[in-house]
Image (tube, rainbow, N blue to C red; front, side, top):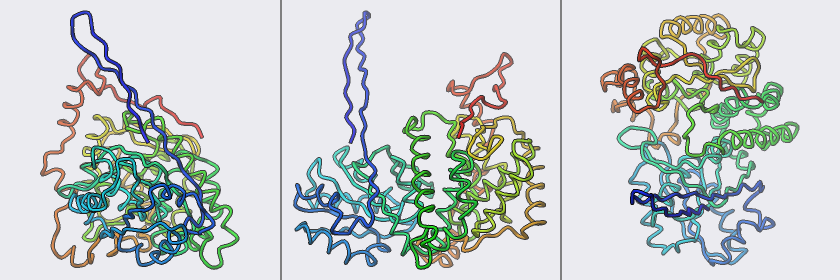
Length: 465
């Protein structure tokens, strides 16, 4: 919950200035299984209200409906369900307004929290509904996917897509509580666990060396056994929990000082430079985890070429990616995409590249701002040659979205020729480096030298493990 308090000052010239500071507090609870009647924490929150509105998606609802109903019935708390369609195509204002209507019908009280259960998509959309309803209302989230547990749950960002633009409308709105229950991984398909594993690789590569070492040692078994929660996974359950707990804490340490993303040198942007464009470029979109590992793999090749990591470190990184079945290259990842995606991402980075790469060892991060297009293209060739010589095509397992991810049959979606933010469309829409740079300089966001050129070169920002 947040509280914004402000004071009024009358200036000597008669103008008025309001200065305010926001106090913010929200909690994370490791509770497993969260819907075991022996675990009272969640029920205690809703006992004072004597009811609960649950927003859940169509994938999770049939799997856990009975368990959830048994839990709340035990405590005498009636449930009102709002089941929403899952998938990226349903991450829309229409879905958000459905949730708002459900809150209205339920008669939600101003401080009464809506309970949101599901993957990162439903927590994003429902969180945005709660941020908007009466300008702000409370919610509690229970993520059920690996990405939701170790990535989306850590952020206070909530959003919907708009006009084919990902997360274009949103807010910063923290839940009262987040309940983290890794037993949900027992029913999560391996392809989705692999998808989320990519985010742990991201965190470990540039933010947490001990997590990196655990991933190298146990990665394949963690993916195959749902971090020890599926049959036969008992031997990796303890390291799996350590990986997840440390990963979450590292994410919070990195993000908490910058919750509203005012600072643009963001360690967790590793893997998120070219992937936003790449993810939607193929005929059927790539899963997010596969798109970011291709981005990270290319960044690792760049770091290696700059002498920031050695041969042994590079080979260790690629071996881990290969062993867990994640992608490291794609035919659509070409020079045109590199150029267009670089210019597009600079719009959100105030005209600078801010390429996050490992710095000397895994767990440390350096931001590059001095990489010319010619070098990016030459590194791309080096990257593709290396991958082909060691790993063939570089394709991962189950790399493309399924109906659950998308919210529609992927083949039917592809057959319609849906408009996407591909390299071609970005250029057609006028996303050009010179325009981005000019706008950023005009806004005072990018320092310039005496000749009017943007001051570039590597930033001094390094984040130690």
